[in-house]
Amino acid sequence: MEQEEGQNSYLKGHFLIAMPSLTDPNFCYTVTYIAEHTAQGAMGLIINRVHPDLNMDALFVELKLSATPKLASLPLYLGGPVHTGQIFILHAPPFGWEACQPVNSKIALSNSMDLVEVLAKGNGPESYILTLGCAGWGPGQLESEIMANAWLSCPAKESIIFNVAVEKRWEEAAKLIGIDPARLTNVVGHA
View: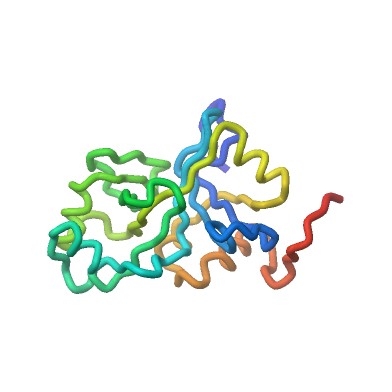
């Protein structure tokens, strides 16, 4: 597992997999990609929750952009309960966009209109998901939730973000750490 020097306890570039016992409706059975994690807190995007009311076509109409038919048919995701009016893009290379923060050599997080406009024209990164909103944790909050057994974590695999059907992402992320999702219980305890 690659870690930045001095960052060995942080989860940047990892999946957070919600345990069945996590009943918060914002995070129940979610997989969250952690794009940033420092002593000041953490930020990520939920990758397996499709927006119930909006799709990409509606988003681009709202932005007064015309999108390719392929793009208009893609799902728009709920990235989390924070900044719900902002667009966040989790994407593969290239990374040369405004407000683009590479997480590692394979995935970056952007939230600028230049990339949205390029995507609307059918250009830009080959693999991406667009979300409204993000997930955020204050200093020590995520660590406390992990200690309370709300989350499992593992290094992220970009194929789960970009190539696995949305309804299978929680199960596939759990399998990354050798867990049979059918055997997980919502009973919390410590051995």
